[in-house]
Image 1 (cartoon, rainbow, N blue to C red):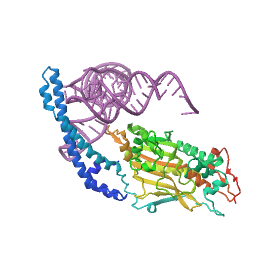
Image 2: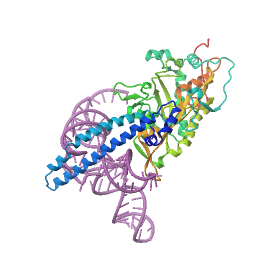
Image 3: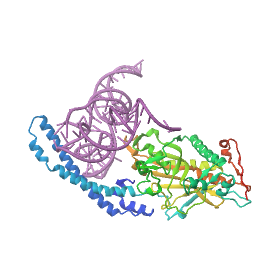
Length: 429
RNA sequence: GGAGAGGUGGCCGAGCGGUCGAAGGCGCUCCCCUGCUAAGGGAGUAAGGGGUUUGUAGCCCCUUCGAGGGUUCGAAUCCCUCCCUCUCCGCCA
């Protein structure tokens, strides 16, 4: 949610900025609505003030044993007038709220303007793209040869876009989660284990609702419960409706959770393998900072995510998302994309966003400014570090050998019980 | 799932249908006093919204005592629904 004051005072500039995101904000309509709302609110409040005054008078008169009937006659009809004014105000307020909840965040000035992912701007690359003296297989084939990935069986258990991992691949997947978690503990993140179901209020807070319900799996009972699409939802909501003492900032959380996405609108995309699943796991970083610190925090957060790829020796590039490719709540998003030899291109394994006060305003997440003693909205940031499934894919592809075996990256050997290589179970033919 | 108890300010806790946004205490802030410390005295101390204003100052008004409805001139207080917490029983990993 954007600052209503900003909308009021600078509606045209907001409209211009949102236009870069491809979002049309009808400033004129909004301002007209806001004026009318103010008028109605004044009406309602002066009626309430009158009622309060009269009621107090009645109370005083009664206490002094006076006859209160004449006073009561004076307020007759006031209740009806008030009720009617309230109804009208509520109607307008709903319309105004509809604006508030549907407006996406304002991109930061340095966010490139663009239509889609093709306009994202590469910041830099890290690492060496591996050379193979054979045609590298994709992770589906590697997974089959080492007998570690089985989507057919998963399809029988649930349906499309799920996988069963087994043997060393399942272990490697678990190793990745533990490795990432431990790594982030070293930079003083606080590990949290959170619910994998969130209610509609939490999803509203982080911006998935009301606009993006189609991306979520919703429970039938209770029907305001949803499977989390990302740990960002429960973790950011740790600070919902709170006022945090300034000296506790920044808060840095790390959580390993499953994520569930309906992937509506992705029909036919990435249908092969583990790239796009209804269920995947992720180690997520969440920061809660003062507004002054969030830019610096963003850089640190992204560097923390990058450190995982570096430790795993995987080549990647850093992309700053263009205005129309960013998520609803983000003011700036940088993706980390890892090299996939089979596709000969970089694929997203992490998305790091600074949501500034956008989520904080929706969640009611504040801190107490030591200067003024007043509560101020915090800034929230989140980033995957990393998505486990896609990282697993990257390892299987980048560390594969001609015989179908896969080298375990050094950083994971201890987590694999000393195992340095995953061996083929089937003929490579 | 069954039975009971309860949800009030940063925390604890009182609250008769009527000057209650709310006694009292703790904590915190400032001031005073006192060789230091400890103790003591005084004042202040919720949030959100709107108006006024050059103003994040001040002032005025409205709202908020778990949430939402209702009764009433007036609700923290009465009624209904829901949510949550605690205790006991049942079930369960």
